[in-house]
Length: 238
Image (tube, rainbow, N blue to C red; front, side, top):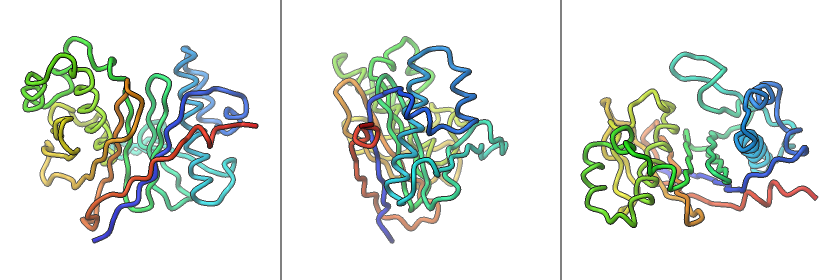
């Protein structure tokens, strides 16, 4: 058994020409299709951060990093999991509010997610996002902790779904993870056999929740070792 190596970079959103210059033609077309400035800035920052993180880890130039998308369900390259086909790294990215996060691992498929706590406070969130057992656990928490708890549940299961490659093709209410007051772990999965997924919470500002997951495809990972780095440093342009 081995320890799964996961590297995470967290950064604040910034949209400047130097970062846009890192995007490829497909990403620029996606950027043109976004109308809200905040959405455009998050796309630029997350993809630029991923390229800089891969360049730093693999000893290449960020301009040389090729990213692709491939859906494990239909094979489409228009959507699906982000890949770095020329580098020996599994990758994932996420963004919410004014934060972006990327994760890299040479060990196994990885998934990462970040969310603004208040974004999970809408009416009906539990019915469309939480497993029945999680709904019961939420009812036992104080209202003061409710937004934090909902967001923590969400990022843990979203990270797991990204790591396995399923994304939202699986109903999140059929996936159960541990309560926010406990160490993160996958407890229930709608299909058998359940995948082996290692989870870890990330350090984020008080109004956010974030988590990373590693999909142990070959059942050879005993635990994960997460190194969290300052992504703002990678994006700093002199």
